[in-house]
Amino acid sequence: MEQIDLDELQTLITKRTDAIEQSVAGTGYLARTVIGVGTFLLDHDGHVDLLTAKQQVTFERFLKPLLEAPPRRPGAGG
Image 1: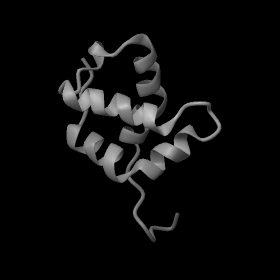
Image 2: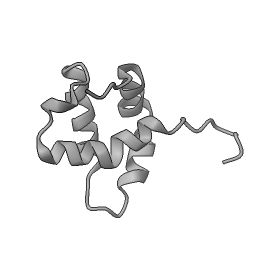
Image 3: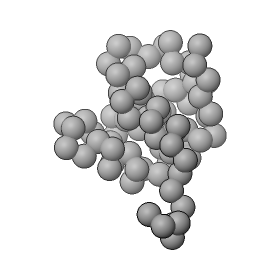
């Protein structure tokens, strides 16, 4: 089973929504859909196996890459 850093996920869906919005731009997905999947994971202790097939796709495509990438720091040459 995949391990998710729940603290990082919480930060992502509450304080880094701009990163989510950038990742879904032009894909037809809504940021609130991605945030909803993140919220579901938080509510279920990060158990990815409880996600539906569509939620799995959303997680793999948007949340997982953002969780694996180090957060960009303001003014850090970006």
